[in-house]
Length: 505
Image 1 (cartoon, rainbow, N blue to C red):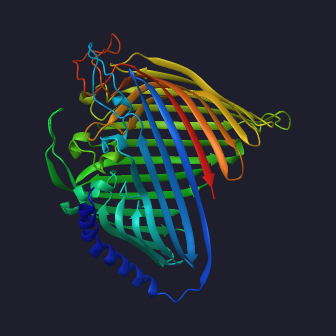
Image 2: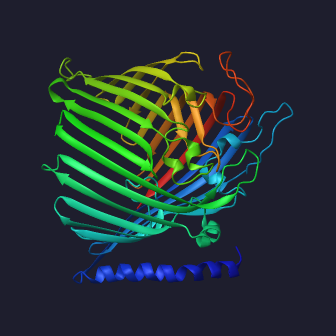
């Protein structure tokens, strides 16, 4: 970016930054003068190198994350969370002579989608100045407010508790995009705006909690286009509203309900019950959830709203978990100090049976697992998964687990994990990623070299039978579909090596 462009960008922001700063200072001055106190700080720097290999290619990336928190006046805090990233080999969409993808497109994440030229980039995830009293507070800067569905913004937020049972809050500013600094010139003058407000109510000695949330997002986005065609941009306006209610009958029974809307259409419904039966050393949970909207309902765009979907298409899910500790049955005063049994069940299906497809599947998953640990800090986890599928996949069973050992300064974990459905919004700006029936094998090590310095390593191999990546290959004899090279892939196998160092101060 040229010096002239940078100057213009800064000039356009000065009035808004001054307005936010003046409002914040005025708010602080309403309080009684506070005595200066000694500077208190804490922070951490993490450096990470990642190598991925598979799908006919490799990918090398290096990251560094910075966290800093300063307390320099009474009730005044400054927080910074940012990251530096560099792709060491770049990404180009190419295919081999037999039509297979030979580059690392399947390793693309959200950073790659908005940084196609692979420049060295620095992103500020959070950076704000906060003033907080017992009954009220405010902050100015970049922030991601809790419970507002991925509503990162640059602006001002305030909150107050005028009554013991009531808290109100509000915020406004510019929506924060995932791009780095040069994207500001692309988005800033487009009339984008984000506003939010909420209220929390406590009743019956805090047993009953009710939360209301509203979010308005006006952002530059894209119109639907066919794969390979240029996207048309426009300024979208969306409203998100949500109500959450929880009631704690007792330690053995806690219940909750969430209902949200995108504009006037229901977005999702979730209800649950959980608790602990102390007498029997049993914990349990039951969950019912429905997603009503389709990815197409929010256009072919990677918006802040697409990130809160848990699947590409409408579905419903019913699940239950039960765990039992056997300390009340077995004598655990000797070599063993913990024995637990876990039972899990999940039923998932499209909201309408006519919507069943490779990326909106129906299955019943049964899982049984156990955890055993010793007083010498050895632990063993074992599980068995059985997935009864409908129509589009073969029935699947899987065995896995983890063995781990913890020393004073070293932790070693060797094991495997398994999932039937995994949804990630990290593929490109127009296509989400769904993965199904994937088994991962891993080795993890973490070493605490000193009180401030640690080192960790992970090596993993994953096999996924279906992902929404790039291929024309069939998965098995029970799957019948026409090739759609931009939307899904052959079974995916890849290796990943991850090395991290962290310094805390």
